[in-house]
Image (tube, rainbow over all chains, first blue to last red; front, top):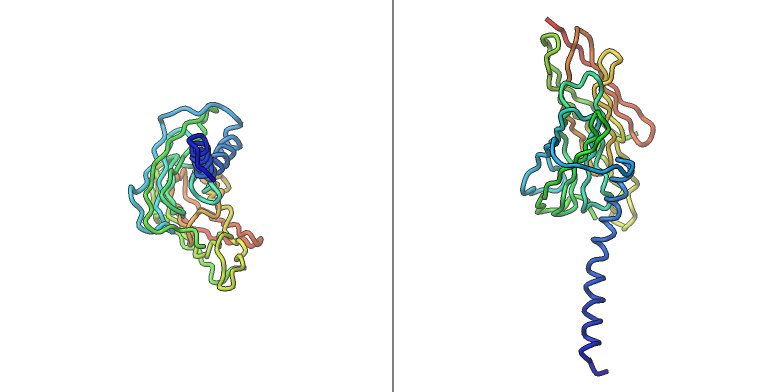
Length: 139
Length: 109
């Protein structure tokens, strides 16, 4: 088979599409989780702080702190995990501050996303990139 | 029921009324994610703590939904305000239906 210029281009495009596919699937799962949490409402920026290490040596326990004054609930997502959901914190009337710290698993270097639902029904989000040396989802 | 499940909670003994107190909780639990495989290549079934709640005298402080991405021995730290003396009630809900509970008293001076 002779490789024509057109054939080579098509091949290249096909290869690029396959490479993008896993990323696309993960993105769809994240979008789905976001839509389930917000009910399709627009998500703003600001008013939420996510503290993560820049580099996590062990993806099995990555300390994460999230804080959003005035929030009623905060959802955490890990965009690169097999399932993007990490957890949701719902704050009751006796919570002194709308913040929580926990330890999470990350399968690899990826974005950690936090979305907060404010008392007035609006949503804000923030995201941090965490570099992971050893992934934490077994296998 | 997972073995050796032991909740550990740290709450200050005393506080001023309305003051924010930091509460640290940890429960020893494998949090089997359902993604891992055993030696023969079979999936190990998921078994995690899927919900954690903290109440103070019946009023909610924190109600958290946990997913498999929470680490082994799930640790949660948060702040609560205490209007009067009383006790915190911590509850963990396991996938297999077990419920683990512990209470911790606090005195308001």
